[in-house]
Image 1: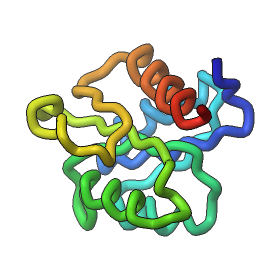
Image 2 (image 1 turned 30 degrees about the vertical axis):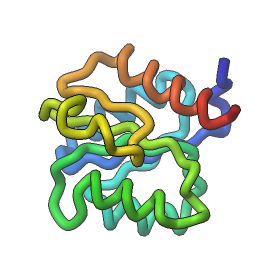
Image 3 (image 1 turned 135 degrees about the horizontal axis):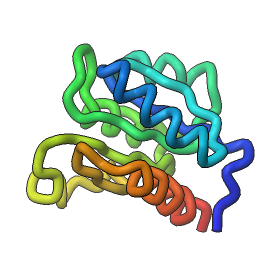
Image 4 (image 1 turned 30 degrees about the horizontal axis):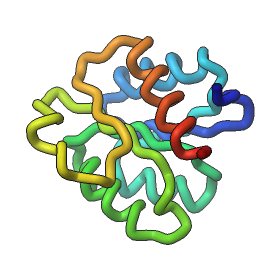
Length: 127
């Protein structure tokens, strides 16, 4: 099992309330959380903070979750970074062949599902 000490998760969500809820869930699991309101903001924060995983919404202004994930994975510094996608859309049908995401969660998701998805992708990434 992955220990959450010193693990930073970047939560990217344009809805402030949702971002705060996701951040709180992950903080209660022991993660350090950095929040961004769109993909470009997330990329800017990644230049300032060490990030171990990303949880991102799909539809956001400026840069959406797919563009964020594609940009992150194309950068050799972050290519192995696990990314969890959250969306209200039917993710499995639409994104089943897209390898930039380590996990897909349909909104609304439970605190347990979010915490479990992050723990799972971090565990897989550490192997």
